[in-house]
Amino acid sequence: MSLTVKVIEPAGILDGIRGNQLRREISDILDSGVEVLLIDMKQVKFIDSSGLGSLVSAMQLVRNTNTKLFLCSINDQVRMLFELTKMDRIFRVFLDQDDFHSQFLAVTE
Image (cartoon, rainbow, N blue to C red; front, top):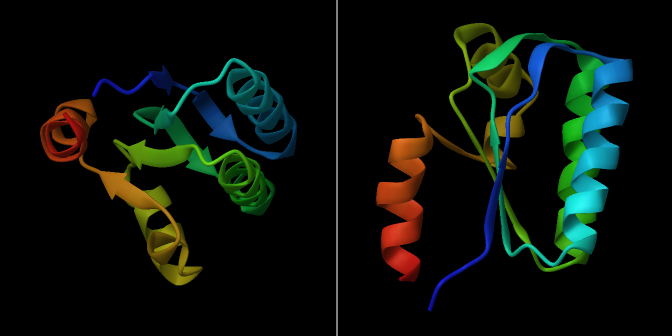
């Protein structure tokens, strides 16, 4: 069984404006029937509360379509924010794309 996986790579600061763009992008991707969405955060330097909110609403969008959403390559600032806000319990975070492929995709194939 092969899953349809889409990787998106936001960059810079994930704030209200960029968060809304990301949410729209995810919504469009979900319309295309993807089964697994991986957000690679390696280019995200900073995330604020609005950006965090956009990730939460993205997760809600994804859950409504039975798609799986994962994150990878988060930096220390984002990891600390996730731990403080308990987001690390909501999102499954992989070290990087290789880690995602070896852990998640290997199990589903």
